[in-house]
Amino acid sequence: MDLVKLTEDLIKNLVKEPDMISVKQFDDTDDMIVIQVLVNDSDMGKVIGKNGSIANAIRTIVQASAYANNMKKVKINIDSF
Image (cartoon, rainbow, N blue to C red; front, side, top):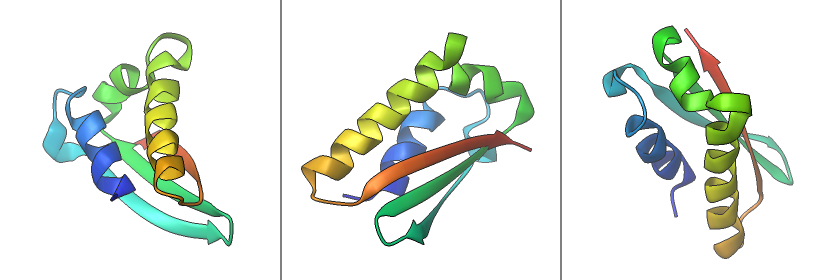
């Protein structure tokens, strides 16, 4: 399972400008995968959601997929440009 592709697909369905997102994976440590998500500043609210509910849902889905495929723990950082 490609976690970057999963994360990208989830976020592209939320934003107005899907071509303006960037999703990259970094192996931060031996026990964690870090996924960096950059979205357009105008789409930031849609990705974060009220009280972070959308961002938490994205993190939950990606982490569940990682666990189901016996992968490392996943940390998702969301930022704007």
